[in-house]
Image 1 (cartoon, rainbow, N blue to C red):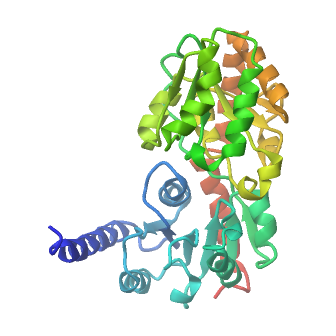
Image 2: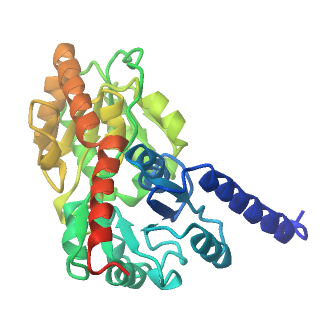
Amino acid sequence: MGRWHPYISWVGHRVREAGIHVDRLAQSADLPRVMFSPSAGNGGYSSGLRGYAIAKELRNFGWRTSVMPKQLELSQRQRLVHLECPDVIVLQKAKHPLNRPKFYPNATCVFDLDDSDFLDPIYQDGTIECMRSSSGVIAGSRFVAEFAGKYNSHVETIWTSSTPSKHQPKHKLLPPVVAFATSDADKYPRECAFVTSALSRVRSRDWQFWLFGVRDPIVGDRMVADLKDRGIPCQIFPFMGYAKFQKLMETVSIGLAPIVPSNSAEVAGKSFGKILSYLNCRAATVASDFADHPLFFENGTNGYLASSPAEFAKCIDLLLSNSQLREQVAERAYKDYVDKLSTHAAAKKTDIFIRELMKSPRRK
């Protein structure tokens, strides 16, 4: 298998490219054209939500759209750009080494970023290069937008979105599930400590705790040890595929979204992330009164905003004590999610931004 791998890879790349040609040629030639270049695959995370999903939804706004998978080589990308002649190329993150405007010198490039890659020494130079060299920047949060504004005068904040479920979650488990979902709990020790402190203050005994995104079981076991000693049922889940994660989340009643201010340099740039799943699956959300959270959540109406572990615990106890309140808050949050954080809502803002950018004198 080892010696055949280069040939298999070569064939795979050409098959992917052929699929893109088939898809683009099946669309009307009279529409404005946009190509997306995500840094990763089409899962339920950043590249899927901000790349593949937005590209698909833009077709409902009168665009001819194509997506270049991360596996494509530079020659393939440049060939596709030459044949498609896109009006705009959206480079989603600079983590992919070929997501650089310099490789597409005759195209109008838009750089899309939904987190603080510019704070990571590994990606900082590439991220700033993309911000400077692109005709515009789409930022996933106001924190990212403020930084991008130093290097580009055309910046639009568009929150990460997802596609609303078409069905009502069948049931919520009893006792109610309180969940903390993250892509990698090991990377956020301050947030984990914050959650542990908050949960230690919850007075109710009739609930259970689920922790998602645990790569090191020792980290998870340490986090739930005190809860188990108190007789609170706990489950620890590793990082998993988005579809499986969503299915489990449908049974959750309360979702926690903490941001520790002292850790803000690392997390302030993040968009709504796992909160999208809380909203989509009708879990009442308790979020830190920080970053972009106050721009979406109206305290006590579509969720709760809190700053300290004690405030988080108070909100959790309130929601645990009243199932009708949980349902009411979750349903209002779902409605606001559809209006402001759905794929359709994000694609609408993207459509307006790139159409305006096409008229800009800075367009290449």
